[in-house]
Image 1 (cartoon, rainbow, N blue to C red):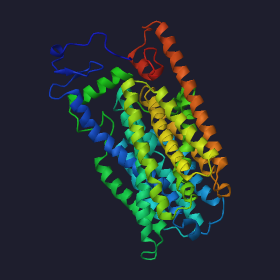
Image 2: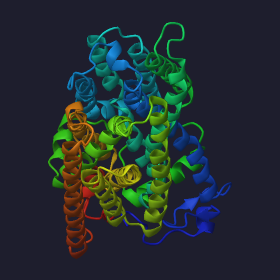
Image 3: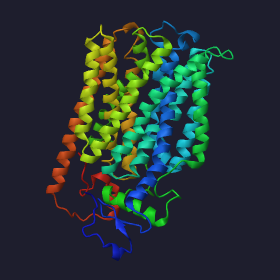
Image 4: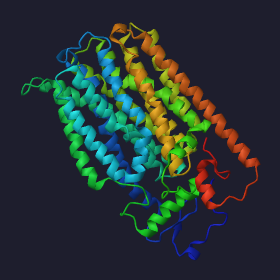
Length: 489
């Protein structure tokens, strides 16, 4: 493992009481590694879960609003493209601004940058409930993409700077599981808020945007004073604790160069790496089916002739089951210290779900069960792929740029997803299901190539000279390209 000391000092020599069980990094005497890890979990993970749950909820609740008359009120009912265009325009700034957002996150700190973004997309979501025409909907969806662009790569980037590789997957999947929780809560909230139809002259879909956006804005105000930052920036760790956290991360991943500014030349250098480009395709292939499910599951379920309220309620169980399954996969992946097979398994599950929907059209129970397979497969494989890729990037600059690239490029799939399920293809949606299967296969092929590339690189480095005379600064600049670094399969 990269940077592990050849002969760790004894506890008595270091004046400290215990060691990290894995890396043998000495822990401060007033605490234990497990106790400090639990404290970090409580100060980091809940904030990220709440933040992304709200972001994802505000992003996909338009699918629930559609069931409550949004299209009819805005005069686009029966148009097979306008609703899809409203979904698509969100992804234009969302994709373009991913890398700049992570650069600003590094400059201003997660507490400032992510909290401001939270305030922004909460306010825009409220405005979305007040629009009077289709043009207004397009404008609000565009600015929703502007403010949400930093959520996903920023949160993953931040997680990667707190946890070593062998313990990251559970946290990544728990954070990513907020999307499943958002899908489940979104259906429950929509079924409740939908009953406010015409209250004070507002339709139910307007209340959906207004109430959920108001909640997000209030949470953003709280986060502005309480949201965590990087290890070297937080004040709730003592100097000894901070040194320990940073030392164990350095032993696992190498120096991160937290003090180093990210330059445009760094972006070009990182994106020249073949492995980094593969990370984008791994994610792209799963974004299409994942967003297809998030945006169109209520539409698909409504096609089974359920009422609007029952449609929202039936959209909840697949999300809930997917969250539990994703956590089981994450725990097993961390235990095995392996990612590749734990990505490929769920991918195969998702393919089987879409294959059922593509071929079975007269059995509602089987069709509904297939939705579970799709949600479980996509939303279990995605956090594994993102964690696998991000934790194999060394250093602040390579990880910040690589994370933003993977998420930004991958979200091009969101545009594909928005046009994959058109009203003209209802209720069978054969074209949409076929597109989803094709992109999942792209993700599987990219994962196989990435696994081959890092395995080949590890073997090459193992055969090469162990000491090539690099300075600490040169090792920091190289990140995971450092000959001493070993990728996790």
